Picture 1 (cartoon, one colour):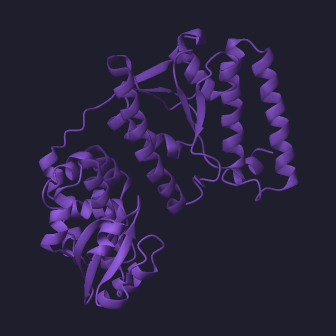
Picture 2 (tube, one colour):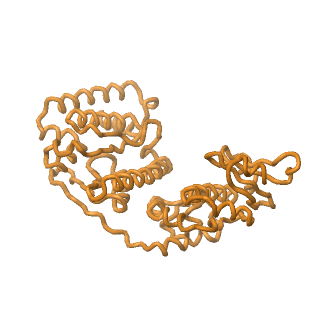
Picture 3 (cartoon, helix red, strand yellow):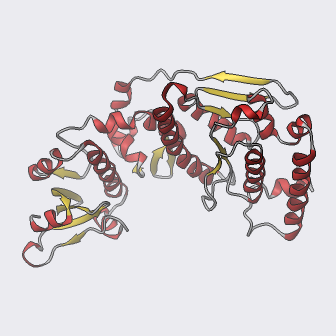
Length: 358
């Protein structure tokens, strides 16, 4: 039985047989019986995850009723079922603000390196958003705790690293012990000016892939990047560094956007850019970074931009047929001139503005 569960630990509902479904159903029923009728010690022995939560509150769950709990679960049958059992138990005990992340359908698992890395890559900005939101809302009363008791060892390892950036405290219980270990966050001693040296490739790799032959990308510290064949993107460590300094890197841009490869700015584009609010400038920078990635990593970058589901680069008709334009979100677009494999950007703004004056 244990070997079948181990072999299907990363399987979805469509990938397991009836024998494993039956095993999971029986274990679920057994777990709920213990959680419903067992005493605190029996509950802690039955669930490593609940063991950590009980010890966090000195075995008094009443102390956690005002707290928010996020359960990080793999998108597998066993992962979702375990998280749902823990969630239902906590809600019954009055800790009603308990939710599961990532959502069903995320495909997050430890099945292989690519799948796992993609899942962690989505978790990092989500954690940043949540921690910033709660720090802003609750200010000095906010305390972010990473509970690393239970779950896959691979997830624990990465969450421990992520916690060094975003948690106020990390808690852990060694296997076979009931003693809670509290690990304070270690300040990351990395200055903004050290990160700024690589801001263009960092921003691009945060929004896509770049070619390993690109000279600027080769300058980025090796442990910040992840290389597959001839393409390069950010490693988990690189993503953490970028997420930490993202706003500073992009909000400093006042009069000119970052100089991305194969993208040129006409003065008319810069004039449009200057008049936009900071948040819009940041979103535009992110779009330009992804645009630059398409131009950088593809031999025919222009065709890649034409075929992109969002940009859809295309020519004007009639009197402006020598010019092109591409779409952005929020009813924004950019007019441009194709020059070889380079885009010369002319105007930016709402569709009506740009199309009337490309």
